[in-house]
Amino acid sequence: MRTRAERAGEPETTVGTRERIVRTASRLMQRQGYDGTGIKQISQEAAATLGSVYHFFPGGKQELAVEAIRHGDREFAELLTGMLASAEDPAEAIEAAAHTLAGQLRQSDWVDGCPVTATALGTAARAPDIQRAAAEAFARWRGLVEAKLRAAGFAEGDAGDLAHTVISALEGAELAAQVSRDETPLRLAGAHLAQLIRAVRNTSS
Image (cartoon, rainbow, N blue to C red; front, side, top):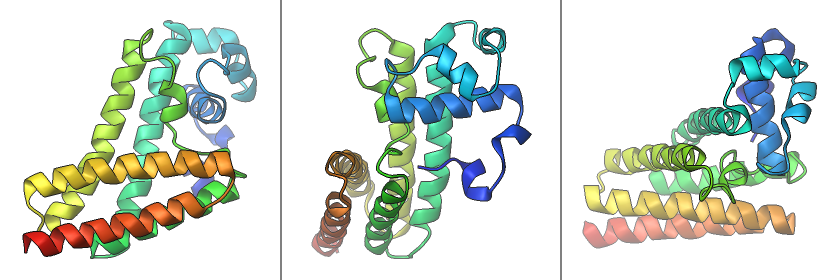
């Protein structure tokens, strides 16, 4: 997933040092994971001194990882909001979202997957702050899908359950697409999620 600045054509050098550090950490941890990303690499690629990194994040890499996850959360929530607004029918919108994610993943040469999962995986047991930030991100994304479904007339329980399924399926399909370097998992997930949403609507109507 590209950052808002990259999508808008805004050069990273125009933002403040703290924001540049967070964006860089988010991108690197998205691609390399938490353990594969060091403070020194973040400082170098953000064009910031190590002193600046620790000035803004005295808690070190864990504190920075939490902010990186929150950044990725906001960025993906913005992207997801736009994708869900692409069609009035939530089934069509979810399928279109899966296609958009597949296309963006291919454009990134399969490196820019979920902005949260790669950072959070493997750290939950030893870094509860990172785990909480990731859980909050997934809850926010589910909330956006649930709101779309509720606006389309789905009952609260159905909308909540479907939102869980949608986000879980897209997350898994995105990982599978990265590993296989193939858009098929995301495109199939989108098609089947659309079928599921229509089936639930038909059953409850």
